[in-house]
Image (spheres, helix red, strand yellow):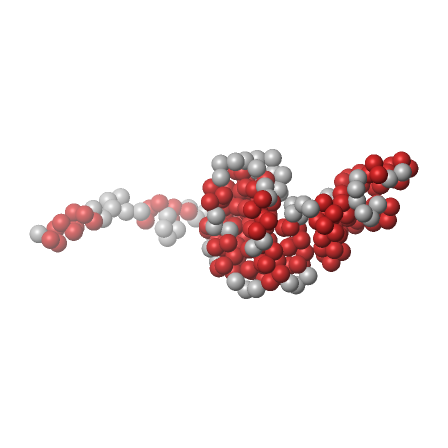
Length: 258
C-alpha cells in the first residue's frame, strides 16, 4: 500500500509528517518520533510510514517501539535492509544473544555492503556485551578493512575496529586504525575526524598538565642566581665543561682487546 491509496487530504498530511521526520531526525529525534506517530495514526498499513516510525524511535532511544515498528515495516515491504538496526535494538534492550542470532541470518547476504558492515559492527558490539572482547576484535577482522573505497561505511568499520582494539588494550593499533578511518572519510560524514581531533586534544592537555607538575620554571631560573653571580660559574656552567672529552669508546674497547 502506498500514499496514493489514501485520500488526497490524508496523503498530504502523512507526507508532511514524513518530511518533518526527515528534517528533524538528526537534530531533534524525539520531535521526529512525534511526527512519525502522527503519520502512523493516519496510515498505519503503509510500509514507508512504519519504517520512518521505526528509525525515528531508534534515534530517539525508544528501542522497543523501534523494534516493533521495523518488524511491521519488514512484513509490509518484504525488505531486510533494517536488520542491522533491529539487531542493535536487541542489544539496547539487553538481549545480545538475539542480536547475534540476527547477525547469522542468511538474508544478510543479499544486503548492500554498507548494511552488511553495519551488522558486523552490531555483532562485534554484542560480543563485547557478553564480555567476549577478543571475539569482537576477530569479528571485525575482515578484508573490507583494507578497502580502497573512500566511503562512510569504510570509516565506520575501521572506527569500530579501533574501538574493539582499544577495549583489549591494543591502543597503538587502535590509533592507527582511527587514522585510517579518517582517510576513508575526508568529508568527516561519520565524525571520525572529530573523534581523532578530540583524542589529540586530550593527549595535548595531559602533556601540558604533566609539564606544569615538573619542578622549576625556566623563566624563574634567575631567581636561583645570586646578584652579581654569573651563570657560567654555577655547577654545570660553561667553565665546568671539559674541553677535551673522554676518548672514543671504540678506541678504548680496541685498547682493551689489545
